[in-house]
Image (cartoon, rainbow, N blue to C red; front, side, top):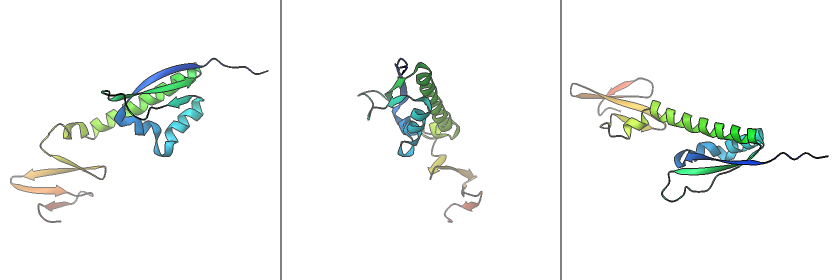
Length: 131
């Protein structure tokens, strides 16, 4: 005798820029979410015209759907807080070029009474023009 659980469906909004984190490299994150919750997760290839969000469809048990929705919200929240903590939100807002982002790391430039110095990756400082 086979018992069929009722299927539920829900939708979760995700900023278009964060969809890659939901999918993961090679689909590893979405596969893990589907495996652990036994839900089917469907992400459209693009956001709706004029929208900055993609609506992610989730089909499965009520508990599984709720878990997936919570996982997606956690990933998006971590991405948002990470961009705020790294200063990306401020550097994009026109802070006068005080920070440069190179290779995923933040490098700051400080001017000291006319002589600009650039800080290297390991705390080394070189005078402006010397490299």
